[in-house]
Every structure is written in structure tokens, then in C-alpha cells.
Image (cartoon, rainbow, N blue to C red; front, side, top):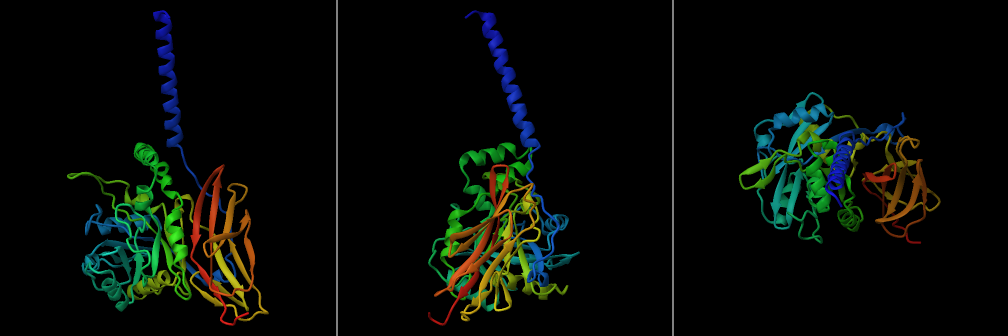
Amino acid sequence: MNLPILVLMSKSALLFLIFFFLFLYIRVKLFKLKISFLNFEPSKRHKNLVELNGIIHFHTVYSDGSGKIEYIIEIAKRLKADFLISSDHNTLKPKYDGLEGYYGRLLYFAAEEINTGFGHLLAIGINDEIKKGDYFDVLSKIKKQNGVSIICHPHNWWTPWKNFKVKGYDGIEIINLDSQWRGMNPLYIFLVFLTYRINPFYAMHFLSHKPKKTIKFWDSVQKHKDLKTGIASTDAHSNVKITKNFKIKMPKYEELFTVARTHILLDKKPSGDQDNDKKLIAGAIKNGKCYFSYDMFGHPQGFYFEIFYDDKFYVSGDTLNMDKKDKNAIIYSGIKINPKKNRFVISLFHNGARIFSSKNKDLAYKIEPVSRSSFFRVEIDVYFGWKKITYLYSNNIEVYRTIPD
């Protein structure tokens, strides 16, 4: 092969690579996935509920985060969160420094991520700092303050939970964004770092994968009148350690705060009194009156999950005694996604197993008489073309009978 032909081939190959990488750059730069929602009317039971969305579990300069509380509060206000809960390691100093309270319509208060012998435990709704130590001692102190105890990032390879048979805690972080990226395929981690500067949304959307191992654990620990709450946590630090003395402030708080949220359901509106409303929010989390979702694809509109039985509605966190055999119990769930723009599937789970699905429409399912405790929850998968994302997870409703067949 003569030299002119080799030169021509080299130029062609170079042009191909230039156009190929230009195409990839443009595709990443313009990448956006948004769910199309319809206008909606709340369901019958949910008409009487007040929904708040919140950002839970992030770190500040009070521990190993890079941001000041005041700066982070302004971000949360701009992102239209209703409540904001920090969780610095083994300290409640933000509270002691008088930073808790309402900032406009946003309520901020401090929780604490406490080191125990079994792993990290999130204490929400406490007023007095708890020192790190033995799990049972820490748990006892949380209970004495009527706080909420949440197992943090149970399957994070960096700081995993070490005793999956232990009892007494109130809930589990099902989505923990720090664990989400640490648990990714190395190729995806590389793509996150490669594309972050081009389009943070593209980089962050890789965090929306389903945490199957943690969900399996969550389903396995539901007990009669002892429902374990699932929540979504950001675990934001904005402080990635590269070397001993070099750290990068990424992902930014603002970017992680848009990825996943916990939505709580209240029987009444917050009063505006910070201490009262702090208890209200902590109580809703403790009692499973919440669901969680990847809000980066759109704020959930019109979502509901309820059981109708004996002229009453039951929602997540409730326990239903189905002793009246002549009464039917029906599960209802829905969300106002436009099926012409985004296909979606609502899946009903019974004791961790998928038993029924409804495609592109609300779900209705009659419950057969149960002979033991049964736990029901829903997941919603949304499709963007052929790309599927499990977008939303409800908490459980328990159904049981005390009268034998």
C-alpha cells in the first residue's frame, strides 16, 4: 500500500473519530429524561392528607461535608423542599448552634449519624446528642428521646451494616445515593466522572438503579405491627477524597438534592411551630407514612396507595385487621403519568413477591382472606423509550386476621 493511500486512510479515521466524539458530546450535553404528568384530583383518602417532600441525610462542615448549613438551606429552598434534615457524624452541633427552624416555608432540623458496633445508625427527631458506642446502648438512648432509628447504607461496601438479624430499629435507607454510586459497575463510575462536567444530570441519572439487595433485606424484616420504614437518603458530602490532601467538591449538593426525595403523608398541616412540626415529620417517618422516589425525573403527581376495607381507607404504615370475612378488601394505587408520553407499570408486592401489575393505568386488586400477616407495597416503573427506571417505592400496609379460618 503506497504512502498517499495510508495518509488518506489516516485522515478518514481521524475525521471519523472527531465526528464520533462530537456526536457523543452533543448527546450527553442535551440528555434529559422527564416524566410527563397529567392534571389530577387526589384520591378519596389522600384528599385528607398533606404531603411534604424532604431531603434527608447530608453532611456539612460540622463533620466531613464541604458546605455550611446556611448555604445548604438556601439550595433546599430554591429546590422547593418542604423539610431538610442534616446528619453529621456523631454530633448535634448544628442544633446547639441555633440553626434549626423555619426558613420561609422550609423546616430545617438536625439529625445525627451515629457510629455503632454494627454500623451507622441515623437518629432523627432527637434533641440531645448521643455518643457513638454499642448498638443497643445507642438504640436505647434514641428511644428514650422518642427518636427514629434508621439503618444507614446497609450494603455500602465502605461502611456496611454488620448484623442483619438485630432488632429494635425503625427503618432502613433503601436508597442511599452514596451507596448507589459506590455499588455501580466500574464502567458506570467512569462514565459518571467523564460526563459530570458536560451534563451533571446525565452523570447523576446513573444513580437511579434499583438497590435490589437492600430491598430484599427490607422485605424480609417486616413483622406483625412492626413495619420497618423505607426512606431515600442523599448522604451528600460534596467532598470526594482523591488523595490524603486533595478533595473534589462533587457531586454538588444541589445536584444530589434533585435525585431522590422522601415524601411524607400527614393527617394535618404543619403548625408552623418548629418543635411541634419536627415531631410531626419524625413521627411520619417512624410510622411509615411516606414513600420515596427519584424526583430527578419529575415530582410525583397524583400518587396514591391505599386499601379500602369496611368503609375505611388504609395507607402506608397502617395495619389492617381483616376479621370481618363478609367484607372485601381492595388495594388501589395510581399516579397521573401521561401514558402517551411515558409508559408505566404499577406493580403490587406481597411479602416481597410481585403478585400483580397494571400497565398505563391505576391498579385495583382484591385481597383474598389472609391467615397470617401479609405485607403489601407498590413500585412504579417508568419507561423512556425502552429504558426502564423503577421510579417510585411505597412503604408497606400490613393486613392480618386474628380469627382463624
